[in-house]
Structures are given as C-alpha cells and as structure tokens.
Amino acid sequence: MENVICWEENKGTYLGILSELSEKETKERAAQVRNVFEKYFPDVLQIGYISPSVPFYEAGLEKEKIMEYDKTHIYDEGEIKEFMVLLREKEASGHILDEDYILQCLNKGSRVSTLEYLQKTLQHVKQTMHSVEGFRNFQVELTQLVSKYLHDKKENMNSVIRDPIYLKLDMNAVKSEFSMVQWMSWLMNKVFDLTQEERKEKTEKKITDQVIDYIREHYTEDINRNTLSERFHFSPEYIGKMFRKDTGTSLNDYINSLRVEKAKHLLENTNTKVIDIALEVGFDTLPYFSSVFKKYTGVSPAEFRKKE
Image 1 (cartoon, one colour):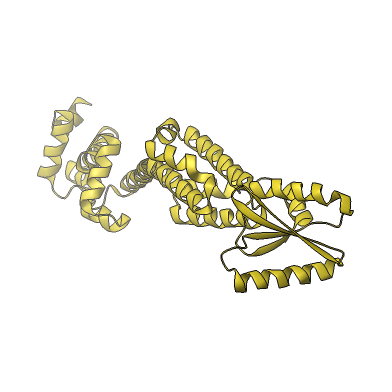
Image 2 (cartoon, rainbow, N blue to C red; image 1 turned 135 degrees about the vertical axis):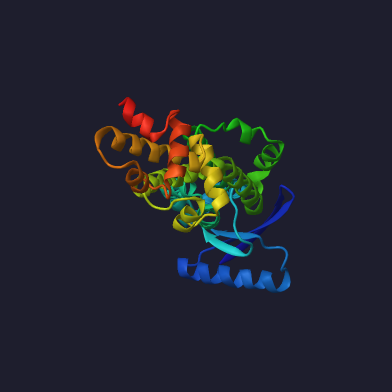
C-alpha cells in the first residue's frame, strides 16, 4: 500500500510517498519515480530522500527531520539519497583538508597543485557532506591554515581579509560550489602573490651563496660574469645585479679583494717572487696586479712586503 501527500513550503513543492514496501522494493520504486519525473517534469525534481522504516505515527516527525536537513545540504539535481546513510556520513566527517600537503605546496610555490587539490577536496565535500555546513567548515579550515601560514611568513592576514574583493567573495562563498571556488581561488592566488617575492629573494640569496663558494674555490682561475653565467645558467647581467644586491659589492670588487687578501698572505709569509704571486692568485700580468693591489691597500706589492 502507498499513500501520496503533497505540500508547499519555502516557495517549493514537496511530494511524499508512504509505503509498506521492503527496503529493496523502496529503492526500486524510488528509481521509478525519479525516472518518471525526469521524463515528464525535467525541471521539477531537485532531490529525493528515502527515510528509514518507522511506525506510521512517526512519519510526520521523520518528514520534519528530513526537511530540516534539506535546508542546509546541497546535492546534484535528480539524486535519491538514503537519509540514514547521510546522517552517518555527517557524524563520521572530521578534518577536511590535508594541512601538511597544502603547506608543502605553499612553501614550494606550487600554485597549480594547490588549487587542483583544493578543487578536488571541495568536490569531495559536496559529494559526501552535501551541506552548507560542509562548505563552511572547508572555508574555516582553509582560512585558519592560510592565516597561520602568513603569520609564520611575517605577512599580515589583515591585508587579505580587508580587501573589498575578498569581503564580497567571502560573504557569498557558501551559497554554491561555484561561489566557493571563486573565494578559494582569489584567496590562494593572493597568498601566493604575497609570498612570491620572499621565495624569489631566498632563491637569489641561495644562488649568491653558491657563487661566493665557487669564487673562493676558483679565484686563481679566469672568473668573471660571463664564466659565472655559464656555470650557474643565469645571464651575466642578472648574476651581477643579484650579487650586488645581496652583498653590497660588485662581482669584480669581490674577486679582486679576495685575490689581494691571498696575495698579502703570500707576500707576508713566503719569499715567492711578486710576479709568481700575481699569477698564483689569478692575475694575468704584473702591472695589472700592482695596480689592483695598490687600489685596495694604498701601496704596491713590493712596498707592502718591505713594510712587513
């Protein structure tokens, strides 16, 4: 036996079917009803629920539970869901985001990987939690994670959340999956833009340290911007600009001052001829060595040796 009831609520029309069918038969019947609606009323059916078996006098209470649940949950149109399964999924839900993975992507500057992961996670939230609450939890978790990340990077989260664009997107984020994707994409792109300069500076500093190490090991060889460019795969101009920015001196000054310091040590502690010392520390000719040495010490190599 089946009884059909129909009512209107919140500008929507609802249809309820009370039956004494078995669980299997109820699922089959629900699928038949869905097919009928899809065929004759393709724009009507939004979502259907199968309630657990309850005594007839509790049917009204079960209906109220489903209606209350439906107000805050989101599904693809045309789906038929078992109400008790949905409640169990809701109870089992815990943290939504993989914080370690997101932080790893942020630290690497992996913008595309981060957004792809978040979109897949958001899709999973929709398919499993089906709720405004699920979207809101996703939003809260991501906001907290971003805030902590920016704080650790000495960036101000207020510069993000006070932006007029953010305020508008944040207000509408839980209204739909599309709105949440808009909010999420704007937020994460903003975070990457804020921290991109820091990552760039760290990369440059790391390269400068490598250049310094290389110079100290190979100062006796022919070293200049061009040879360093070939070694580190950056343009000569970029190498020179980056080095001056990080050290406050030019590449040429650094190389020459290092060679002069090495020459001073040899002049003080050995009887090696000045011309041989010049060649040993990386200078091609004695006149050029003498000119550079005097520039950095105020005296010629020979005068320096006599003083010592």
